[in-house]
Length: 330
Ligand SMILES: Cc1cc2nc3c(=O)[nH]c(=O)nc-3n(C[C@H](O)[C@H](O)[C@H](O)COP(=O)(O)O)c2cc1C
Image (cartoon, rainbow, N blue to C red; front, side):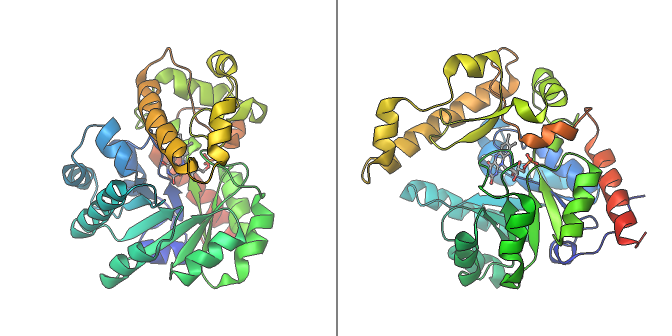
C-alpha cells in the first residue's frame, strides 16, 4: 500500500503522493502517464507527445488513459505565443481536456491567464513552470494556484538556480511550490519536502521505467550516466537543453551555428528561427526516441541517483514511504 503524504499539492490535485511525472516530449506516452497516476502520483500529459509521437487522437488518447486508470491526470500547456495556429490548437486541447474531466494543468512559458480563466471556471487548478521570481510574479498576477520551480539540475530546459535558492526566492508568494529538477531517488525527494516544497515534479527518473516507451538503449544510458555526463546543447531548440553526452552529441557539437546565433539575437528573426528549431527538434526527437542508433537522449542531472529501470509504481511507493518517514506521518 502506498502511504498517504498530505501537502497542498495533493489536496489541489486530489492525489495521494505529491509526485508529478512531468510532461516530457517525446517520452510521455499514455501508459507511463497512467502508471504514475494509478500508483498515487499524477501523470502529466504532453499533448504533442500523445498525438504526434504516440499516435493517439487527443480525446481518444485521454480516454485510453482513463481505461487504464480512473485516477486524476494532468495536462501540460506550453503557451509560448509562437503562432496563431499553435495557440488555437492549444486552446482546443485545453477545452477537450476539461470536457474529459482533467482538472490539473501545468503551464510553461508565456502568460497563463487564458488557461487560468478556463480552468478556474470549472473548479480546476493551474500550476505554472518558472525558473526565476520575475516569471513567478507574472504567473501569480495571472492567478495561478501553484508554481513548479525548475532548477539548474532539471532535465529539459533547466533554470539558473539551485533548489534551495529557488525555493527561498518563491516561498513568500502565497502559493504552493513544487520542486522540479535533480530528484533521482527518494532521499532527494525527502530533502525537497524538508526544504519546504509541496512536492516534486520528476522527468528523467520516470524514463527509466518499463512503462516508458523509450528505447532500451536510452534507458540503459540513463542508468549508466553520472551527473558529469550531462551537457547542455543549443543545437536542439536554440535554447540550451540537457542531454547525455554521447559520441553522437559530441559529433554534432553543443553550440548553435554562427548564422543561427545571429538570427536568434535578431528581434524580427528570433521567433522564426525558434519555430524552425522547434519543428526540427520535434521531428528529430521523435526519431531518436525509438531508434537505438540515434543517441539523442535528453536527461537531467538526476541520473546520478538512478541505478535501475524500475516500474513506476515501485518508484512512487518508495518515494512516498521515505517522504512519510521524514514527515513522521506514516
Ligand atoms: C526528455 C525530457 C523531455 C521534457 N519535455 C518537456 C516538455 O515537453 N514540456 C515541459 O514543460 N517540460 C519538459 N521537460 C521537463 C520535465 O517536465 C521536468 O520538469 C524535468 O524533467 C524535471 O527534472 P528531472 O529530469 O531532473 O527530474 C522534459 C524533461 C525531459 C527529461
